[in-house]
Structures are given as C-alpha cells and as structure tokens.
Image (cartoon, rainbow, N blue to C red; front, top):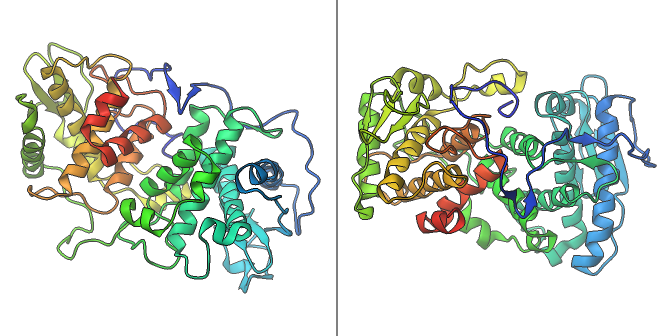
Length: 462
C-alpha cells in the first residue's frame, strides 16, 4: 500500500534516476510475469485457474530453477524438488494440512517439513498482495517459503536443528529470498522480470506489510522480525549470495535484531504526540547528537514549513539563509498519527498517518541538511538524499545510548521505512526535495547509518 498510494505529504521534487542498486543499474519497467514465460509443468493439489495460482505456480517453477543452480554451486549437493504443492481458499476448502485446517489458515503461506509441502492461500492472501503491491509480492512470499524448504535440506549445514529459534529461520528465509531476487534482477529468470526501481519497491513494501507488530519479542515462537529486520535480511541476500544467508545464526541475530518488547515505562506503546513539547525534545537531542561537529545546528521553528527565500519541502524545510528548519506542526502531527493496521489489510485510505517517528525523522532529515551545509558538504547533489537518510539512521542509533529525554521505541524504524517507501520521501531527499531513486536504496542508507554510524555515511555517499 505504501508503495502505490498517493503521497502523505507534498514535496517539490522528482526522484533521481541516477546511480545503482547493489551494483546493478537502476531500471524502470513493469515487473511481473514475462509474456513469453513457459507453462510450468508442476503438479499442484487443488489448483484453480485464478491469476493468483498462475503467478504462484510460475514462482514455484522459477525459484526451483534458481535453487537447482545455486545448491550445487554454494552447498555442493543437488536440490531435491519440493514433494508437494497445495493451493487453497480458506472460504471454500476445509482440509487438514500439517496438523491444521486450511479453513483456519487464512492470510497464510507456509512450508510443512513433515510433508515437504509448500501451501498458499489463493483466496485471501495472494489477491491482497497482488492488488496492493503488485505481482512480485506474490513471488516474494513463495520465494520465502522455499527458503524454509532450503533450510530443511541443508539442516546442520545451515545451523538448523530442532533448537533453532524461529527468528533465525525467518531471517535466513528472507535472505534466501533476496538472493533469488538478485538472480531475477540480473535477467536469469525464464518467468519473471523485476526492475531495480519500482519492482524492488513492490518487494520492500510487501516485506513491510508482513512485519511483526511493534512490541513483539524476537524470542517469541513465530517471530518473523520487524520490517527493518526483514528488509535487512532480504538486502543481505540480494547484495551477497545464498551461502552468506546460511551463515546467519543466533549470535548474529542477537547482535542486530531490532524486534523487542516495549519498555515498562513506555505508556504510549511506542507513540507520543507531535507537538511543541516533543519538538523541543527533538531539538535538544539533535543539538547534543551533533555537538561534536562544531557546527551550529539549525533551529526548528513552527512557521509553516516553507522557506520564504528558498526552496520549500513542506511539512519541513531547511532554510539555509536563516539556518532554520521551518515546520508545519499541524501537518507533521497528522503524519505522526499511528499507522492504521486495519486500513493496510483492507486497502482503504489510512489518512496519511505513518507514526510519530516518521514525522520526527522528516524534521531530522532537514536538520542534518543544516549540519552538512555547515561542513561545506553539498546538499543538492546525487548522493545528498541517501547521505541524509544514512545520517537519520546514525542519529537513531545514537539515541539508544540514552542521555536525552527522547528515546526510540519498538517499531520506530518501521515507521521510518514507511516514510522511505513513499514516492516523495523527505527522509531520503536532498535540500530541494529530490528523493533518492527507490525504496531499496533509501532503506539501505538508513540501515548503514544505524549500524555503522555517521562516518560510514560520507564514505558510502561522498
């Protein structure tokens, strides 16, 4: 939904189409099933003639072809095809699969190790994914389930046993999905084509959609990870390869996973109002975070979100002539309303609320424009938007060390991702409001700053 609906805020500027995505050129074309794709020769129980099943079966044939090549290459063994495939409609079908009824398995796709079976809900889940995010969202989900089939075949070679936590399995499966999509993006698929711009945006949006709720523990049974965690694993596979995915273990996950319960004193369950008081807290945290630069940070002023003598990017603008960040408090407060999860599932207009952290991060992005300008770093070139998103990530991580009244909560990074997936993201935009080319690159930049700090931002995006 986030990738295909209208903007939550008005920004003057077109996305840049320059640069690359993980070593691949930025491309723009319609992603999905190729016109010349062959007809898969697969046996699927209960298959229908629906568009969803056609996509699903093509995805199964395609990801099977991927693993038939990758398994010998990376793991020294042949890939055994999955034994059974099942399509079901929870409204119409009532059969027992893997100890559960399909009528109770709505909005689900799963791999059953005992039967070596991949099953998917063609009645509710796949139509929702296809309609809201595009056909590659269906491919994403089935590629993920095949990642679990890969784990079952690798076993201890991927560190998978009865004691392996769910979150490790899910991170590996998301990573395997990323490696598969790299293969598609390089033009190796007989069935699908995916652009590195809009196509990968569909994937990022679908991973955001199937995130865990804020406040869930990564140690909980069934934990899949936050959107930040899931996109991290996908990008890891896309940027490296399947062998790297098999190396993900509990120690690695524990060192970087962001999924955690709410703190006992977090009475707002991750949400605070966007108002004069919290904006003053934001000003203090930013001034303290960037004090070491020796640059006088801009003042945040509530005077409409525009620059009278310069380019405006409402609801927050960096006005270089006055070294201020002009904000429209009312618009930011609306943006800061919690994400409407029910609206996500039904596809209706959510009203533009992306969460408090999305609103704060937009202001932070304009503040760091002022810091960069004070250091004579260009804020209107090709890298400026990505460098800015990276610095927002670095500031977020710095907040976790404490010292200021404003602290990040579970789900905040997901709210930043929600904003980064907007067509006119301000977090990843230069001073003129021109955002970086696509969601994949924007999320990658936020992630880099969060894990590696601000020095990595200038190194990666000079």
